[in-house]
Length: 522
Ligand SMILES: [Zn+2]
Image 1 (cartoon, rainbow, N blue to C red):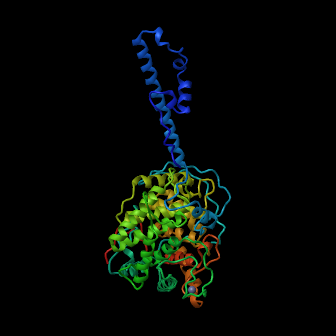
Image 2 (tube, protein in one colour):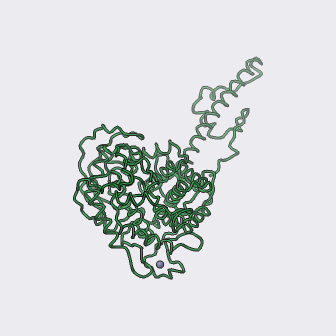
Image 3 (cartoon, rainbow, N blue to C red):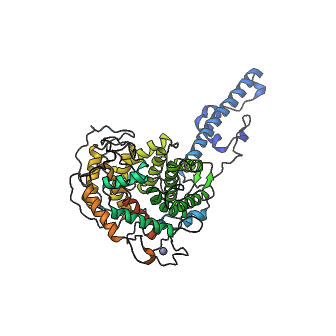
């Protein structure tokens, strides 16, 4: 949208003013405009000049005010309109309109719950002593997916490996870093946090499947039918964003400590990161990696930030920072993100952007504090039960997946482990149990229960871990992959389910326990 550059007002002539200015002048200043025509030959020359100056000055003043109002209105309109990233066209947007998205996205509709009792939340650390009024419990299950009920059980972590005793747990979220991916740390954390040799073997097989389905250009596609695959693997996805697919494939590889410099898959990871870098559209607002929607942007930014944190590579530094800048620019004034930059937010898109920003912070990159504060404002607006549960775009229909996303964001934003709202929310997830087929929900909820060291964690972990081990394919070229018939991830196909299942099985070390380890030394 362009502003009419001819819209100017000459200070000395009514004819140079815009109609709006004249109208405003006439409306506001009738005493001036209704003055009888000045007849210079009847008035003294000095008075004529004074009147003339007065009229001109008033006109200029009011014209300026009118233009200020107009400029403000134009800027408001521009900001309220979803921005289109540089390089896009109307055809691009139509091609990737929301119904085509991988359902990393579709949230099942549920019965409304009673009106929430919202509490003002602080964006930074929340006082653990804060009390929450009793609120009606959400009747589980909130989502339509099948969930495995797990009985709450007391925390019973495996005894720490003797090489180094873990630091004492804390109520403050000081952990969450990437150091657990190093080989020695990974083995110890698997033993301590609930993994098993079988889960680690499943991770290795799954990573091999991913690497075997990398395209020759270094990227991945949700349609995973490479030449080597020759369509032997079923359930190809349909979503077309190659940045989202590539990032989803890279994340579990990075999660297991494979970088361009380390690990058995370093060549694949290096080519994948180079592909992501090559797909970046540089704009005045940062690096655009959407290829369709902000899902691609969030996922790709997480991958770049993690890769930089693990390697310190200067090229990754610049790319990750540019991607973060684009996320900050794309935020809606209400604090959220959605399919396109500037749209009012929803929880699923926000979840990826939030974790990208946090990954950026953990990597030492620059993230505007204002962006995080606004995002926390969005969480405040969609929370129910004082922050124990969350809706998709508002508080009226809290559901399990946005609740899991919201709670994880709250934990990373500084909520203490003993915060009663967090405890209540974690209980809601634990009571629902892991889903048999909704890996999108499981991905977030598993992180929440793990970090919270919730009473239901052991039962949740054992059920889901064993379910994933049992359902990993061993069929021909599909060996090592997963596919679940769930509409949340259907457009992402086998690649998406495999990536999410892998990251669930990496939960023991992909991020250090948020409330237990500030860092590790092995
Ligand atoms: Zn295949």
